[in-house]
Amino acid sequence: MAEQDSRITLLREISRSNIATVWEAYDAELDRKVLVKRIHPQYARDEAIRARFMREAKAIARLSHVNVVQIYDLREDEDGLSLVLEFIEGMNLGKLLKDRGPLPANVAATIAAHILAGLDPAHTAGIIHRDLKPENVMISAKADVKITDFGLVTLRDQPSLTQDGMTPGTTRYMAPEQVTGRELSAATDLFALGLILLEMLSGRRMFEQDNPNAILLALLNYKGPHLEEYGEAVPAALAPVLERLLDRLPEKRYGSAAEAREAVLQSQPEGLLPRTLLEDFLSGKPFSRPPVAKSVARRKAWTRPFRTASLILLGMIVIGLVYHLATITQQPAVIQWPPLVFAPEPDSTARVEPGEEPGTPGEPVDVDSSDDNIPPIPDPRPPVIKPDTIPSITVPKEPGFLTIASTPWASIYLGDSLIGTTPLPKPLTLPAGNHNVVLLNPQIGHPVIRQVAIQPGMTSELKVNLEDFVARLKIASVRPWADVYINGKLELRTPHSKTIYKPLGTYDILLRNPAYPDCTLTISFREGDPVKEIRVDLAQR
Image (cartoon, rainbow, N blue to C red; front, side):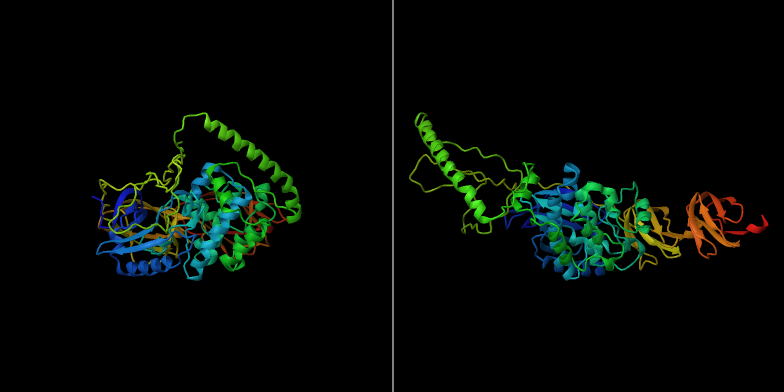
């Protein structure tokens, strides 16, 4: 049975990951829906994780920013940690992009500016999201843009845990420094924001590769954005903003989220979209920005005759309406309100006197009026459904453990998400079952994938020499010199001492010096092969 207390009752399980279970819940004390993220007990029992989680969650709760999903409460007991969060009636940005495709430039810029507004106080407080992506940006019915999942940042950073939601969406929004092992900073979030903005404008992801390993390679070789490939989808005013957000080097990006937001604002001479227009766009209504008046005097001069004509027309409509009402049966009219898709913002001024019960949503509101023909106005708020039954909950299987050692050092990815770098300070805690472990050393530049089987309560060991799983070629000596081509691509010019790393396979090697005939070689590499050296004297061939 799902857990409940005198205040919070779990209503419906929304999702489950390796870290936490997410529930729609009901707060009886405040009579509202909330979101509950309950951390699995095997992680919550770790004192170091528990202390850091509580510390960072409290820091996030203190942000209290309109563009960050609010943490209402932190709950802990012997076996569990829970976050009680603001419940957003709406959709995430990922779903919006999937449903609507590319967004108008002013819509994309407005959403990006709101995201940056939420990142700024977090960065100022020393909190980096590290997993910013469209699925972690919520958009409410009232066009509020809110960053979510800040509360699990500390767990994602633990090498003993897997990542929340291991899908290709995570690596697609990584910054190059997350792959190369450099220290992460606020600039890491700004890179992710640049990727999101580019996707909003073009409907395309910068890293569209089919699997996480291909994305990791693309990040290793990333030099900078090629915005010309996106054509007119990227407005000229936003191009320099994207160029800076998506710079390979963190120090060349904007110095803060506030600075980046100001750059986005400067790119929009008419300003950000008003909330009502953004709301209209999200609801599918005809959407356009009202024209900007050239001058106040001209606008007033134009509106005078229009206002006069409008008053005359309005008077005629009223006369006709009065005549029509006089001819029909004198009964109170009933106004049929269309159902609302989203819940409105809670009314902070509403009070219930002691001993009274809150009114049932949908009941007529009594209005003191002498006109009996004034119809009752129904409460448009959808009812909060209080639970009659409590859903069942499935207890996760006991996890297992994994130690990893690699030569040379490597970044460790599970699924597609960065866990840490070797040597890891302690074993990973993993759900029982098979897992693909990806090891990546930037110098070798090619991911090594090993599958491990995790047994409940057991510790498995993975030892990997990365060089056994890649082709290694060294151009030891070429006289007098040559350009070295591998499978038709120029690799280097001799003399050069570096070891060339390639995936295992067969390669055509071409040594070219215009003063001598070309030298061609075919070399095959299999798992465990040693470094293969090339020594050639072109003058003797």
